[in-house]
Image (cartoon, rainbow, N blue to C red):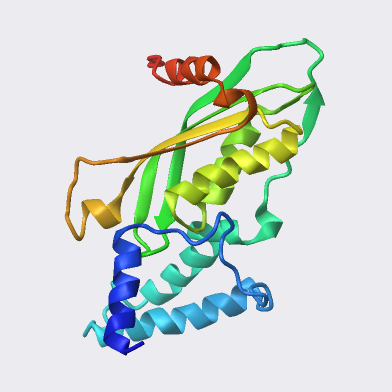
Length: 225
C-alpha cells in the first residue's frame, strides 16, 4: 500500500473513532523502562516537536514545558497504563441484604482520545446488583478514573469499567453509561462544540428491559444540592 493511501486510512480511522480492541493495545515491553526513563525520552521528543514548530525554548515561559508535559503524560494523563496503579477494590459481605441496584452517577471522566491525544471530558454512571458482595463507593470512582487515564476510545472505556466491576463483584449484573465531549470533535475537524457522545454497556440483569429502564431513570434524577 502506498504511503498516501496508508495515511488516508489512518486519518479515516481517527475521524471515525474506530477502536481495534476492548483491551488497551500495549507492547510486550511496555514496562521495561522506569517512569523516570520514560520522562527523559518524552521530554526530548516534546522539545523536538516544539522546536520544529518554531518555538523558542529559551523563553522563560516555554523552557520548562517539555519536562512538564513528559511528567504529565507518564504520571497523570496516562498513569492508568501502569498496572501498579490499578485500584485495589476490596469487597465486603452484603450483610444488610440490600437486594436492589446500587447506582453511582455523575462520576467525572477525564480521558484522552487515542487518535488525536485531545481530552475527553464527561460523566460516567455505574450500577450493579449485589450477588452477595458489595464494594466501597469510592472504589467505583477510582476504577473509572484508572481506565480513563490512558489513551482511549469511549466505547472501550465503557466496556473496561463494566468488565472490571464484574470481576471484582463476581457478578455479571453491572452497567455503565458515559456521556462525554470529545475535543477532537469540538475543537478540530468539524468543530461542533455542542455535541456529546453517549456509550453504554449492560451486563446480566441489566439486559432486561425493565431493569435497564430503571437504571436509566435513576441517572436522570436531579441530584443538585
